[in-house]
Each structure stands twice: as structure tokens, then as C-alpha cells.
Image (cartoon, rainbow, N blue to C red):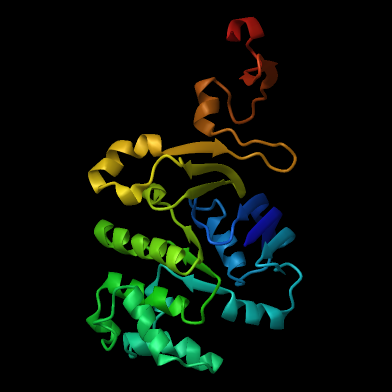
Length: 298
């Protein structure tokens, strides 16, 4: 569904250039449920905006559903945003119109497309657990219920991919769990590709893959081990098995470059401006600070 190769995004502010993404590589399979994490300023929201067609790449390659978002025309981009992708924001105000009912909010994108289907709008609200609340206005709904309406709106034009930017950032932990369960059910029942941007590592319990972005590049991935199926475990069992349920892998880019976590380098005494020696030792790649000898390292 998504292929990013050496993706670059540069913002120009007055005479300054800010590099938000600097050679990011990423592949997301059709029907995958995955999360993107990273510190503030790492580039994760920039990536999501480009996937959603809200911003264009500066260089590299960005293919979504076989559409080249670097070369696509403005007219094709509008069609892409209407038909291929749905977007859920952290701020409900960007998804919802307060003086309409939940049902009217979901119907509105269909009306704009000239394809109103009240029965389908109702089924979407039932799918997100709001079958009994569809005639309520937004001021009669809780924050979590409003976010579920926003998810239904994002699905109203039957997109192939759903993007969510910090969808649980403004709700409590219990409500966040409900919302993430909805994403997982939509992913399975609709064969929907779901990409969630978040800073919450607890998402690893709900998705199959977590991609970490550091300094504008994909640095590591956290994958669920196939031996673990959390659908068959209760919550306490999930907590007990969490440490063994996932494995973290560092990502090599197309040139073979690797980002080493800062805490690992600090542990062997390597500073930000230092260099390291790289040696092959009995089938292992060993990083050695420049002031150490191989013998001392061993």
C-alpha cells in the first residue's frame, strides 16, 4: 500500500531551510495495522501529512496504492484524498461539525461526493459502537464518542487506507483502549490498511508492527512475535507476556546505514562527535570506541 524510498521533506521559512525528513525508507503492506512513533520533531506528523495528500514530498519516492504522490497532478490529488485515504485527527474540531448530529456528520462527505447513503452511514456508526447515539448532537457526546464519530466520518467514502494522528491523545486510558480496539476490528473486517501516528508505546499491544522514526529517518521496528496472539489472552496475561511478545529490530537503509540508539553509544563511551571502529568478529559486527584496542574490547 505504501512505499517510501529515500523520502525527503524540506520546509522553507524565510531564508531558513528545515529538513523534516532526510532519506526515510518505509514499506506498509495492504491490510496492515501499524503504528509510527517518535519524539516531537522526529518527522512522524510530516510523514502522515504527505501520506494523506496534505503536503508534497521534496524529493525521493512516495507511492501509495500505486499513486506517485511526488508527480501526481492537483486534480488527481483531490481525487486521491476523496477516495483512497481517510484521516482522523487528534483535535475533533477538524473532523466534526458541532451543530449536526452524529449521523449527519457521517453523511456529509457522502453528500459532497454526490453519493449519500443513509443506511451505510448508520452501519458505520454501529460499527464504532454508536448505534444508539447517531441522532445526538456533538455536545451530547463524550470526547471518546466524538472521536468514534470522527472515525466513522473518515470511513464514509470507503477509503482503502485510514490515517490517524494521535487519535487517543485527548482521551483517558480506558477510552483509548476502546478506540484502538475499534481500529483493530476495522482493519480485520474491512481489510483496511491503518497507520496510526502516536507517542504512546502501549500501542505495541494492539498492533502488529511499530516503526520508530528518529531524526527524519526510520530507525527501528518493533514486531509482534508470531507465537503470541493477544486476542486469546486476558489483560493481566497480556501484561505478563508483554516483554516476550515483541522484538525490536534496527532498520538498515538502502545504502546499508544504521542508526545506533544514543543510549547504546553512551554506554560504550561514544560521544556525539566521536567516530567508532567497525570490525567483523566471529560473525558479529562489533562497534569499538576509537580509544580502545580490539584486545581490550574482547
